[in-house]
Amino acid sequence: MRTFTVSLLLAPVLWFAAVSAHAVTPTPQLPIPPAPSLPNVASYVVLDYQTGQVVASKDPDLRRAPASLTKLMTAYLTYQAIAGGSLRLDESVPVTQTAWKTGGSRMFLQPQLPVTVDQLLHGLLIDSGNDAAVALAENVGGSQSAFVTLMNDAAARLQLHSTHYSNVDGLPDDNLYTTAADVSRLSRDLIQQYPQVLQITKLQSYTYNKITQRSWNPVLFRDPSVDGLKTGLTDASGHCIDATALRNGRRLIAVEMGAPSWSSGTDAIEALLNYGYRFYQNRELYPAGKQVGMASHTDWSPMQVPVKVAQAVVVTIPRNREGDIQTRVLWDPKVQPPFAQGAVLGQLELSIDGKVLRNVPVIATERVRKASWLDRLWHRVRAAI
View 1 (cartoon, one colour):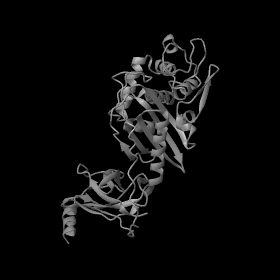
View 2: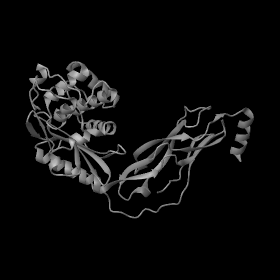
View 3: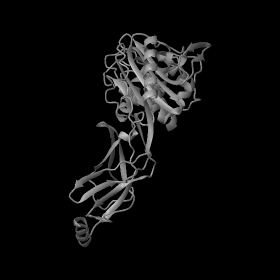
View 4: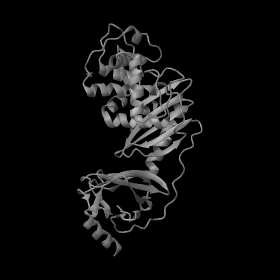
């Protein structure tokens, strides 16, 4: 692991120097090939789950009809309700006439047939049941319209800025749209907060009401490393696949939107996953609590303060490019003494070839008070020497 030396003048009397380590001479490597072009796919994103970094993309912010990818948010809010205690997995849910008569793909609910929240989640994510989506929405939100409001509130909170929901199941509507980038971010949040969702989405079939239905996710049947997440199909959306895979302990999320068939969509997902795993890797640059430098200011007492990263710093980079990572500190000029131990003093920016990989907060390792006039005078004398 290499720590990179940087010295950045932040103000006439404020500076930061990174901790130095042995230099690493990069070994010449063949260039990373470009990401798959996939001309038959409207847009795509490959996202590293651990770091949240985008490995490859094509028109990631292109707004598209999501079709049943909408149900990812329906599942997210259902799990949120379970975590909050307002819903239980084993709770029996009444099936209304509205849910029963909902068209499109179904898990075949019936008003007089018992169904639990857990069964509805299976029917939602494996069978892509529109009837399951309506039943969950009515029970979590009180009504479909109220649930749609919750969906859009959650989208804003999760910073899905190019997503808008108008229904709970993904049936065609001009006011229903999302992007490959937003789907990948929602998928990451869903798995991070509710990893139990993968215990459902990895299943290749589900039986309810004596009817067994095969999962709509075609990648499950080709790639044993894939364990989720969802698909969608309408005339407007084309064939959409949101897949996640775990290989050698590393998880990737690949989203393609607008493929002409399930076969071509599966080919696209496999090409994207293989590209991300073959040509990119995760590297820990600093462990949690690692001192990464010294910050100094003549108005501080003490004048010099070690700074560290609170969390382990892991980046997704092209293979064998660790030696090319550049670092610099972006100081926060709003920070004024006194401040406590653990105060965020700025951001450690990590980049390769001018492309920012991550910005990581750096924090003070000790409490700092405002220097007295005598301290400041002495500090300025020392700084001038």
